[in-house]
Length: 454
Image 1 (cartoon, helix red, strand yellow):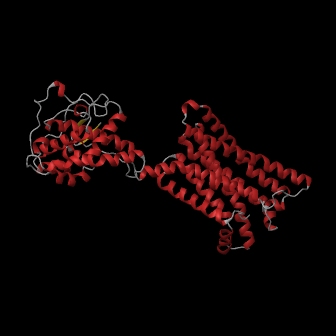
Image 2 (image 1 turned 60 degrees about the vertical axis):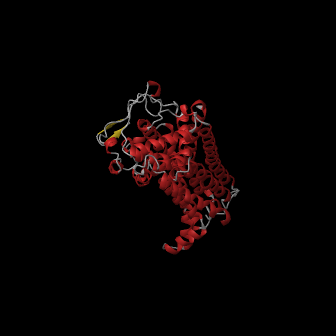
Image 3 (image 1 turned 90 degrees about the horizontal axis):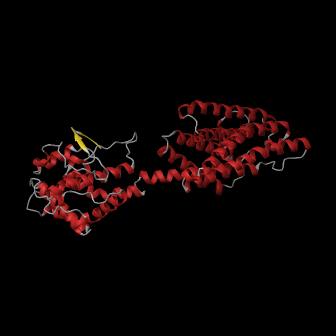
C-alpha cells in the first residue's frame, strides 16, 4: 500500500504536520486534551510515513524477511496507525462530552486496546493479500470484508460520538463564540466524512464480493487521498490555530504581550524608585508567567507607585486635573522620583481633601489606555530626574535596578538606600493608604514581612 500522493504535495504537508507536532509538544502539553491531540498527531504522522515508498524500502533494508512482505506489512500497519489516531480522538470526544478527567488514561488504555486488537485482525485477515503481493482491494474476497469491518467499526463509533458532541455544542449558540461555532462546524464536517467512509466501504466491499465484481478502487487511491486530506491537512490545520495563538503569546507578540512591552520602561523606572510595591510573581512549571497576569501585575504596581510618589510631588493633581496631557503628568512623576531619590521627606500635610488621591479611570480598559498614554510620554520626561535639586541621579540607579525589580524587591531597596532614600524605605511595611486599589475595585494591597499579597 504505497501512497499515490505526489511528492510535491506530500512533503510540504508532512513537514507542516511535523512542525505542528513539534510546536505542540513544546508549548501545548499540559492539559489532558493537549496530550491526546499530540498523540493523535504523532500516530497520524506515523500513518503517512508507513505509506511512503522510501520509508517502506528503508524498513525492508533494516528488517529481516522478504522485502515485499515487509513493505506489505508496513502498508497494512498504516491502517493500524489510523486506528490509534482515531482512539485518541475518541478519548478527546469523551472528555468533550463530559467524562471524568480523573479516569482519562484508564479509559484511553481501553480505547488503545480496541485499536490494537482491530489492527491484529487486519494483519491476520490481510495475510492472503500479502502472500499474493497485492493490496487488500486487489485480493478482495471475504478477508477483505473482515479487514474493512474491523477498520470501520472504531471509525464509525468515533464519527458518531464526535458528531453528536459537535451538534450539542453548536446548539448552545448563546454560550459559544463564533470562533467556537466555526471550529465545531469543521469538526462536524470531518466527522460526517469519517462516518460516510465507515458505512460505505464495508457495504461496497460486501457487495463486490457477493456479486463477483472487482473493487472500483483496487489501488485504494481514493481511500489514501481521503485519509491524506483528513489526517494530514484538515486536522493539523485545525489544531494549529491554538498553537499559533500560544506561540504568539510565548514570544510576546500577542496584544497583551505588546501592552506589557510598552509599559515596561515606565514600570521599570517606577518600581526601581518605589521597590516596596513590587509584587511576588508566580511562574508555571516552565518558568513562564501568563501575559494577562503579568499585565495586571504591572498595572497594579504602576498605580501603586504613582500613589506613593504623589507624596513627593509639589503638584498632586491627577491626570484629569492636568487637562489629560500625559506629558505634564509624566514630568511631575519624574520630579517626584528625583525628590524621593534626593532624600526629601514625603509631605502629608500639604494635600487638602480636594487633592486626595483619586484613581481616575474606573474600568480596566480606560485604566490601561491611560497608563499606555503615560508610558508613551515617559521617555521624554525621565531625563528630568537628573536635573532636579542637583541631587543624586536616579536615572543611573533606575537603569541598574530595572532588570532586578521584578525578581527581588529587596535588592533595589538596598540600592536606593545607598542613593539617599533610606528614610522613605526604612519601614517596608508602610504603604500609601487608599480606599480603592489601582484597578478601580474596592480593596487594598498590603505588605506583610518580605512577601506581598494582593
